[in-house]
Amino acid sequence: MNMTIKKVLVALSALAGSIFSANAMALTYYYTDWTSANPGGGTAQGVITLPDASTVGVTFDAIRTDGTHGSFLGVADASIWNPTTAYTSAQVSNASTFEALQLVGENNMTYRVTLSAPIKDPLMDVTTLGSSGIPATYVFDAPFTILSQGPTCCWGSGSLTQLAPNIIEGREGAGALQFDGTYSTFSWTMPNSEFWHAFTFGIRTTLAIEPDPPTNVPEPSSIALIFLSLAGLGIVRRRH
Image (cartoon, rainbow, N blue to C red; front, side):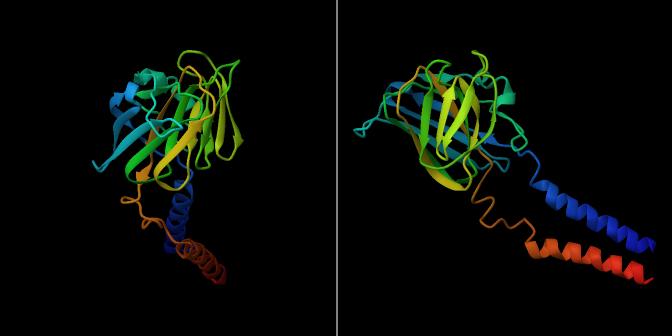
């Protein structure tokens, strides 16, 4: 084979491989640093810092059925996210190194997270949701996917079960849930209270950093061109 053609083939093959493998790599997520909390008043504030030093403000509210603020238990330190195997996967490379908010809630309490900027593919880590004898349920306003689950920090292994596209049930469950798409706010209700469970919130990127559609992802036509080039070089080689 002509050495020039061979080098081009190798380069094009490597490029094609990198394009298709990029989406299969575990990605880094950036989690909420809960900077202030008022458990009795049912509010908390935090910040997510991204690699470009931009930040996203995070506001949490616990709201009763009559619209007034409820309460939550408190703030747990970052050790609650050990072991990290419950929160990492083929899609997510890292767990949170920040605090978690501990929830109890009244029956049908609504929890709401509001972001200061539209974010993409948010991740919610939950831990100690429910107990072996008393399951606890979150009903979200958007569908999600369970990416991973595993043992809790302190009470062994339980389970998370997806009862519907937007409903999770925990029996001492711990794991990571992903909500695909772009969000500025989302919320969930808890039909029955349970003592206690915790969560935090992470993001992959923001809409400002990665617009829809992404500007740095090759179009299908570009990918097709790579393979046409490979095929064309193969034809040239055979003719010689």
